[in-house]
Image (cartoon, rainbow, N blue to C red; front, side, top):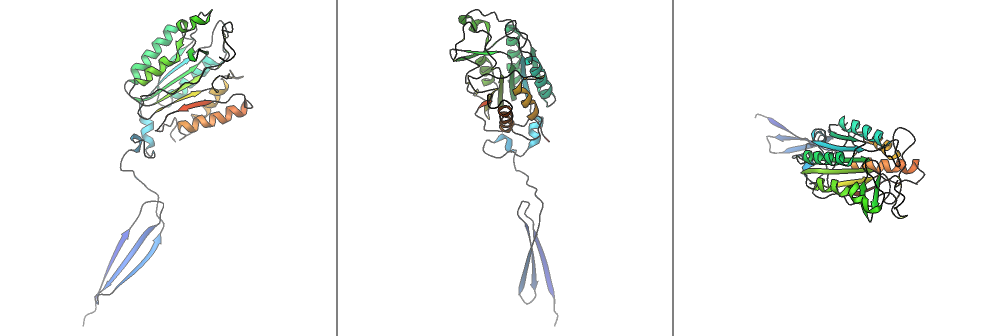
Length: 296
């Protein structure tokens, strides 16, 4: 009589946070089988079957996508006004431009720009973002609201009366309309334009700073518009090289793997704390996707 035994070993490894299960099955010639099982720790190694960046319904996993995505920024800083000069506005624009350039953005920079130069920058920006990716507009300078509409003030604006604002300034909605016609995945608008209205001769008490604006439509995964302070409030021009808001923004866009929302949330906390609650940054947000300024 010949005794023999056949032993078969089956390994099933689940690559997740769960433990792997190793099952050993021993089959005897007599037809009996003994199953012995024990657990073994496994490594975390999930590989998505598709790039979740393109889906608004799934969690982002592919950080390399953000690093290599096409990114375009229009940066405008106006400070050398004849009426109400701002000492830090141009510094803010220069430093934001340098930071974004180092993160792969193609930057269009305008300093102390006239109305024509601002329009030229907006047109160039519109052409660039027609190719898709992420579009970002940053403005540091005087901004005023008149009858519920926000205007960005060029350096050569000559305003003696309220009726001249529309002709002399850039309607902030013009930038939003350009972004709406883009093929961008995400649009970002940052307005550090809430300083005191330099044209007090026609401003009303309820027209301090700039008023609320909705983010532009059209981007595949939404948009966010960020204000240096709450609508109708006034922002600090800062005591150092940068304004208070932009100094905190520069800090957090360099933190690795913070989403846009996380960056603006941390900026809001720091600015509110530093100003003892007098300046509280604000955002209007329609995002359904993520973006990271800095990838670790």
